[in-house]
Length: 212
Image: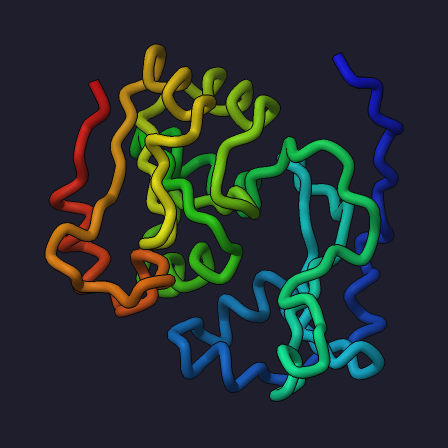
């Protein structure tokens, strides 16, 4: 296997260097202030980015992710999301250490792409979701999911097809796996399943399709 340098653990108080202000735009999108506070969502004045910690599965902060907040970020050629430090291998499931007990209790894990989806779901009382940080499962993430031995629900953005993910297909040979599909055109073209509210998410969830 590829040799990857050891990742550094960051200071647990590193987020204190950023502005602790209410991110109203995210509240308007359906994330409660309580959840924003829980996940230490802050504002980086220098970079004009909304920032939050990236934890490993043991709950150690190993990176910071920043979301462009300038209204003209596209025109300026800014990346929508950036990591502040080298990421290394993708053995992360964002929210994992917060939600592990709920995952084990429900015997089910919901995989979404972005961290904001985890926050929106938790705001609505769904506490067994984690973010891949991308649209496919890495080998390292596959190993974590295999060890869990729970049902896996793939809830990717509408424009992504989990059936093109070879690691997900391999995982479905060992874990019971499902995909959430928008067959009734309830979502926008690039929406995540929770983006149109909890009622739409629950309808999509209830119609999930098992992979066999």
